[in-house]
Length: 330
Image 1 (cartoon, helix red, strand yellow):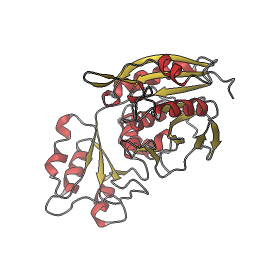
Image 2: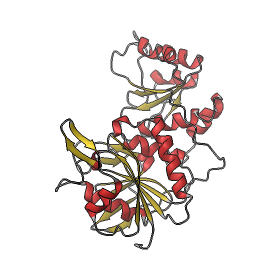
Image 3: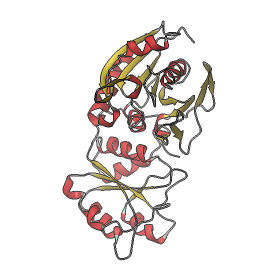
Image 4: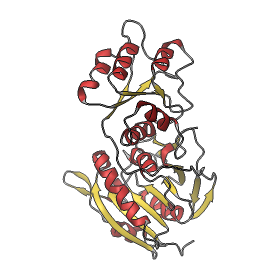
């Protein structure tokens, strides 16, 4: 597989950082990083898209990244793409790219590091080598390769701030492993047939609120005044909200009446949310709130942005959100 041509696209992040007087700053170029790992890079070309801490990456950057990937993928000489990215928002970017790049024929593999690649004990060297290896073997789609594991992009969540195994695959099998340069496919992602051609239009007017015991309904009420068109609520357990003293049902139904799409997901990482099991959430189910089922929060947020970027019709929004597009839900 070393005869495959890989494009490395750098966006910054810890992997590209150097120490400065104000702390770590992403200053290494893609070529710099290739020089650090040295081996097996003869057929890897490098592009520097931008150099940012991933805490600053937002919808505008997602559009820029997707357009660069599409432009690169249209070059028939490119067999796979590796995107270096900061870890803090990598799961959001991987999820959004999963929707923006629906049907892409070549693999797009995101990777990064918990420590700068120039550090002697950095995990960045292994991660970049592994990502290049994975990009030579994987089928088309979006993935994260980190700590020797390959995860479907729309199923990844960052679970550790320092560990080399920073990401986990939530409610979905790991796609592959890379160990000592050896790629092992564990699960072939389902090929979702996309019947419509979508643009890269997304709607950033989406909010995420995590409920805590005692959350004021006024916080939920305020969403409409902020110009928010879609709200993802991290609810209790399978979808529970307050229904006494502080009535979240009333506030969320009020938002839906104002045209705000309401998605309920669980604060639990694993298994599914469901709004028709318990009385406390059945009212919302009957009023038209949508369950995120077994999606990650990152997938629910980015999918809602993507859906709202393509339609404002409530029935179409619900239909698209509940459709498994790239493996993000069962």
